[in-house]
Image 1 (cartoon, helix red, strand yellow):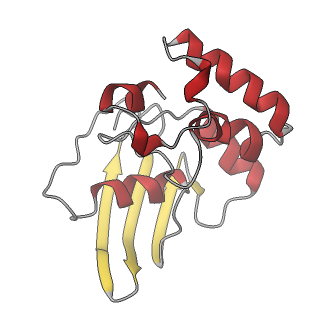
Image 2 (cartoon, rainbow, N blue to C red):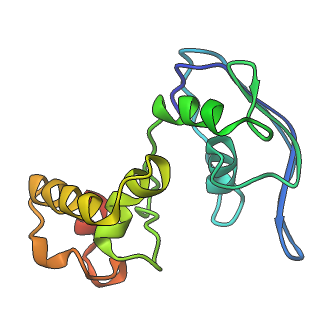
Amino acid sequence: MSSTAKISLRDVHKGFGPKKVLQGVDLDVAKGESVAIIGGSGTGKSVTLKCVLGLLTPDQGSIKVDGVEMTTASRTERDEMLAKTGMLFQGAALFDSLTVWENVAFGLIEGQGMKAAKARDLAIARLEDVGLAADIANMSPASLSGGMQKRV
């Protein structure tokens, strides 16, 4: 995690049913500091980052980015933080329930409210920019090679 913002996690907890993934996580990342989160499979690395980004809501605790409490942030505050953020998970972490083009266009549709038809056209253009043919747009991410998933 490379930060152009100050990030602070205090007593963050997150579970999924009986599985407790995060239990009292505390972390400070200073502006300009780079931090690596390492650990074994299932230890909460991705869940921690997803909570910071607001993709998941912690069950308990505080997450502040540049002093703004992200667990209760307004849509505008969250959008401002996300506009400065980029992330790629090791396994591409695509939504398996969405098609390739829907994964590419997710931010346009959900974040910017763009109409699906226009977002699809833009997604296909971006796929072509990274050497992926338009005919993969309606495929599921699972049907792609690992390299193709990374480009998506």
